[in-house]
Image (cartoon, rainbow, N blue to C red; front, side, top):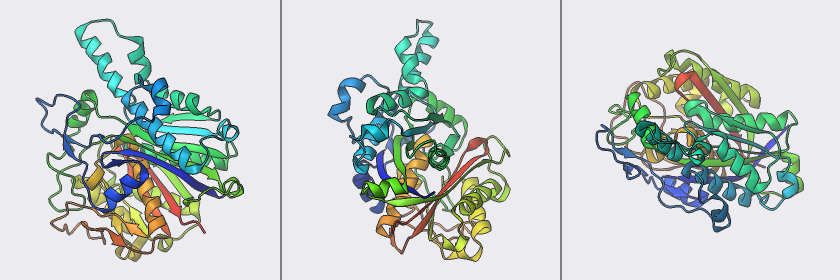
Length: 400
């Protein structure tokens, strides 16, 4: 079965809406700045990718103004994806559609309030608990648009957003739905920041993937949503097919809680899974949108994994990491990178890996550095990896 991608929506630190997001990426704009969401006194790292330029559509404001900020990001992205696909008013198809969302922390705006009540030994508010729960974003999304098919919430660390796309494609292939909404989301919060600081992977300056002097990643927030359909259905309703989901892979290498497996074995395995699922050879891929966190171990192991999978082709195939601009969007990272991958296929443009200054002999692939690259891009592999050994990859190919 062929799966078409017919809609996308994005809320990100560099822009809200697909057009604004794509322009910022192609222009090399950074969304990283000092944190304003919460007091950073006492924190070693105080820079992040916050979402500023956005608002909840008026049609959703009345029902969801009290929702957690993370949930509001999801609703905004879903609203754009449905409008983009032409399904926003198709109650019949939405009543049978699947919904797969992924997050690392859930509704942490309200989660922080719960923690404050606990610390102060005061009564917790039931509303805070409801809005914090992982399923609430899915509940509000389903209720708003009457989405009545299978509903799943995933949390697979930094591979969550990509894994959600893979799961949505799986549901369509298995005949459980002909339409699926998939994506990831997260919001910056004091609690989440404290936990992320404990990992000791955060840079105090900027994200510089593949650079010899890289010193860590920087986390950010937002939501990315993609709308997948059975391709026959999409053609029947004359939907705008942006690309096809050619293949997916999800695994867990169970190597270490935080460290990547030696030579990127987990990432290499999941990229091979996606290629096999797509019935493609490594040379069929024109571009890799890398996980590219900017941490010393990740970039070396991911580079090794790409060389292992693609062989000599790896040295002619452009590779980029947009985390250098948008930061690490946690549960939304894979979805945001998938959207950029699809836009590369659409426009034959690869956004740059910015902040690059000094080559690293261990990172020796043809990265797209500091300036966007025009190239023929018919097939893109978007790669994700996460702590706990979680890995996911998805391959997009151009529509006819």
